[in-house]
Image 1: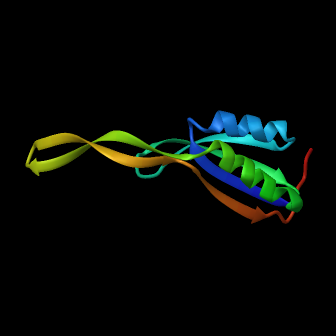
Image 2: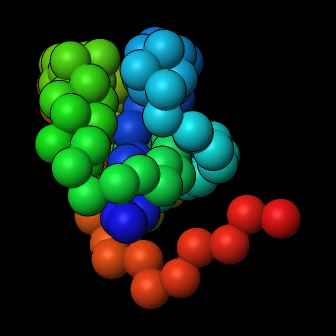
Length: 107
């Protein structure tokens, strides 16, 4: 048995979660924060059999594509003087960890 941790954008998580559920994966969603943009993320936790891991990763990849967004950024020119300018950044996609499960108990 494996435990999949998939960290993705909040924008992608509903579609990913729904697609995984349709393929009979049991999914738990957690609200998480981190990364360069300090934006909210979603971490999906999926427990599955070893032979179903690759399909789960495929589904996650289908619904969590990378894309470019323009976000405001600030730069300091002097003490107390800041300027805001747009910066293009890559968002979306997913970071996936697959862990071995030593024991699984469902009560």
